[in-house]
Length: 353
Ligand code: SF4
Image (tube, rainbow, N blue to C red; front, top):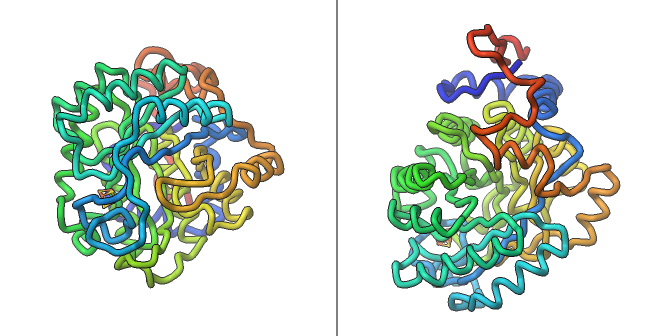
């Protein structure tokens, strides 16, 4: 039996993450099967609805106005064009449509257009997600009223490493946006990026901050840095694939109900590495040749890979999806329910050895 915790200590997370790989994978996969269909994957499509000229200075990002990356900048897209892209995404098997804009935060004058986008994409019977920078409480409420399902706002890295990556907003600013989103009852998508020059301690700290939120994020994207020429991180060292898998598995153990997403950097991953990530607990990915402004594996390649692995795209009505849609109202896995007042067992670091 597994219970959800949000009081993780750093040393516990390090013990989990650094145990022998086979033990870590076994524990993570066991938990994964308890909470998710191990042969299903949730497919999202991400569209850049406003590209470039962002005033922030995230050191990994080609969209910052501070770096010369030769980006093709674009103003906010028209609603009809966004809806047409969402229809295409749906016909390719995506169940969630994510819309990203390169802003510090959305301007109030843009809110009517943005909320209308949400309404029209939802009318296609797709889940909606937006990532637009920081949101205040009023904006979060407006998006909730429009029916927005998810808001993405990554913590990116540990608070300790954060100041080497971003100086134009604080870690507390990020936590504040997540709080505003959760209070508006919008589901949170929040994760981080590996390969930013962080240490193992930083990876544990990032996961600790995600897992110790009052409520775990419903979606946890784990990105691998794409080293874009012209950004300050263009010459960063390669990330060890096994270290990446360790973070995926640890995220699965700490946040059992969350959908863990393989996000940016998949084009640089071998099929074998992605297969190991799915075994370790990743159960979501972005489909489509572009992720905002960087490349992603082709849809054909992804289709072949999923077929080889026997993994099916999740539909909106699958029980796994229902965990997130019906949270707090109905338990789709009653046989796994933990009766109140019953002693429960959790995979503590000691038991996992
Ligand atoms: S806020 Fe977003 S778009 Fe802007 S520089 Fe940072 S990551 Fe890039």
